[in-house]
Length: 148
Figure 1 (cartoon, rainbow, N blue to C red):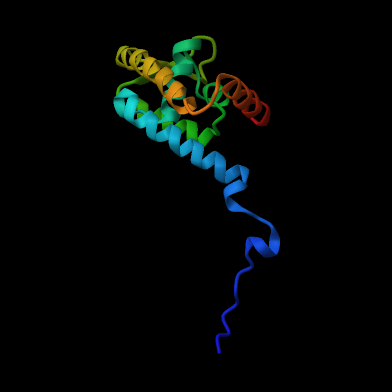
Figure 2 (figure 1 turned 90 degrees about the vertical axis):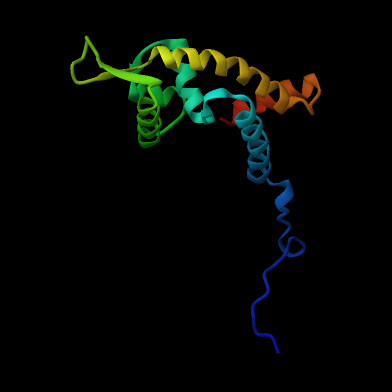
């Protein structure tokens, strides 16, 4: 006699893992992450790339504002910024308008890397979305913006 409880299955509760939004988003993100790591130079993570790209686009800013602008919490932002500073890609300088604050900016090496990485990131997006027709790509991106 086996007294071990048996887990309920999808036949019992109707939950199909392969059809769940979180599972499908994770699989899509894994696809994108693999393509990203293969194409983007400098061993940047997608999060590091986002931080550097935002600084390239918007210029120096406080760490707090930087984190908010790329949808990261304070602790994550600090870790990313600290790692990029250690690699010589970012630097901090005192804010001339508010002595309590420091501004995060790209170093010359950071500028060179983000320029090359951005071109590669364009290719990552194209390859990630390649299985979709043009209209499907537009719909997917529109719906993801709505969810985010």
